[in-house]
Length: 283
Picture 1 (cartoon, helix red, strand yellow):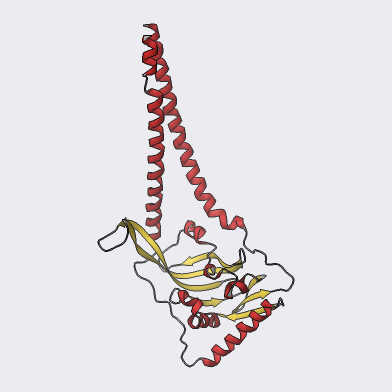
Picture 2 (cartoon, rainbow, N blue to C red):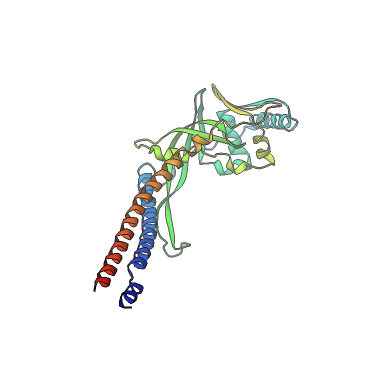
């Protein structure tokens, strides 16, 4: 009866499991916070406190150019709607003019500008706003936690492609004067969904979803619709997921090592329980 009573009251197994659960929870919270701050520190190395000035094309005295651009865009739109083959060729200045003139592109103004186009790449002057290091909110700021913005100012080197009926940019480099952009950051940012806001069945989204390819030439980008050909991704899922897979693998390895440690703690607790029970029985 004495041994049964002691065994029933033995707290080792229950305590070990509770401690293990608490340790796992604390580890995951602490590890996530640590990764978040480390990431913010790395981003701070190649970003700035203030945005750069990205020029917006002037519209003054450019009625003739605007009319030609509007005619070119409408001709392509009608051909796509009618299921015909067509190619829309746009120069860097025509795309910059479209950004300045058309309301759907207003969010891009002051954020990016096409600098040049070649057969291999398109170069864009950028000033992207990013989230900085998390901090407690000050008086007058919403929420408990916020962050001061950081700005990625430089030149993006990329190649356009199609992914899920959407025009995206496969980034090869981001040049920031005097700084080096981490490769891991590029992997997370690429492909950059520059046209995500236009996805849909109406307007720009309807035309974009019918594109069969996006190609580069000397000085122009070609948006191509080939009749009878279904749109096909030019960027693979493997390219999209590569950076995320590396991050998840890092988390998985860290979690496995920690769970192994927890398992050892539980095993030692159970062995100690049995040893104490055996000592009680001998008495």
